[in-house]
Length: 129
Image (tube, rainbow, N blue to C red; front, side, top):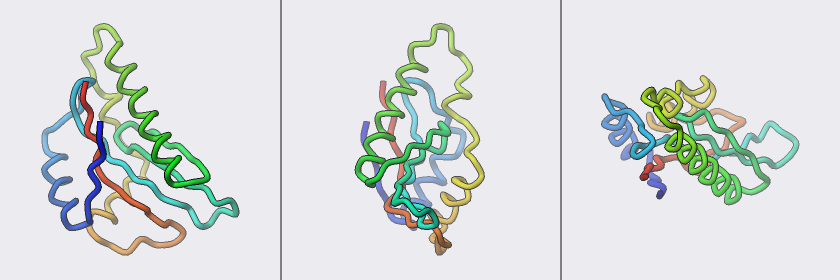
């Protein structure tokens, strides 16, 4: 697995093509990621979210939040890949929480991110079996 990090303008083109008729399966796909800090909290917490899997992790550093998110994604896909008779891949194609989806839309449309969020990066994680 690897991360594709892109700028807002380039990302919009990828995202538009990606979100067409494409659906994730346990052997291939892409998941949208965001690593950000919520500055409204007193603690210095960083968050990582995998929008299409509804996974959210937190840590005290952005690097650890990123690493924990990648590990969570790998575990999630591994479990989905090992479920016998799984024909419905809805767990790999979930509707994201509104707060994260709104943040993603702002990022790909190159809109200003309103406080309290500081986005470190966003992009697509490619899924390989």
